[in-house]
Image 1 (tube, rainbow, N blue to C red):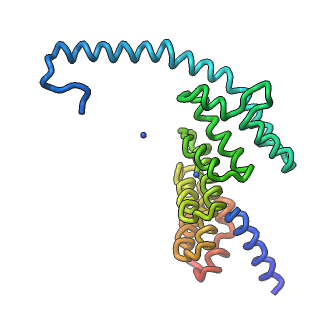
Image 2: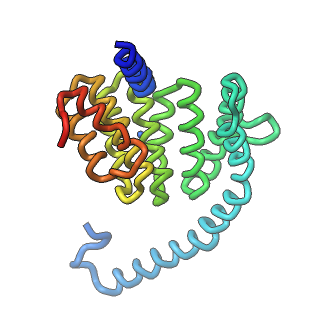
Image 3: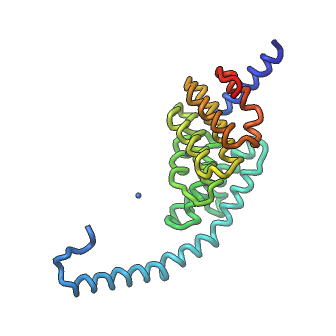
Length: 239
């Protein structure tokens, strides 16, 4: 009985955590000389933009973003909640002398550094419990770095759960798990969280399927170590 109580308490804590992620430009009938001229003008315009505007803007952004990165590093490493809250606001708004992520995004819109600041802003808004703003910033972020993209989707899931957008939350937890299925740690973590969240929604079979996928695809992961206990709780014993 005592062991059951411990398990129920542990499950409640896990569930609580889970419930707290844009015709062709000319007509063919136009004389070929007009088309050729237009191509030259467009290509020339692009080259001017690329080398006279875009690249210098990227360079300036890369030089300037380190300030926001330092703020975000301080925020990420802070332990005390009050300090973390103060640092989250600094990430977003700067310290008076230096701008934060929000002004950086506006000033350097379209650059890789601005894209990264969407992630910083989203994580900060999530901590501040401004969930709609967190979702907006994180949806504006994208990267080929799968662990970071997975984390962004997971945070959208967290924010959606807080807003009681349960379907969105579950979808983003599953999306986070599927970004790179070769990444055992990240994928198993979000599969587990998706399974727990499916349970809280009363989606028993979906929870079972998620737990089974975790067990089958990532048998050596930490999350798989006790997955049979979760399956048994849902009536799936042995396999």
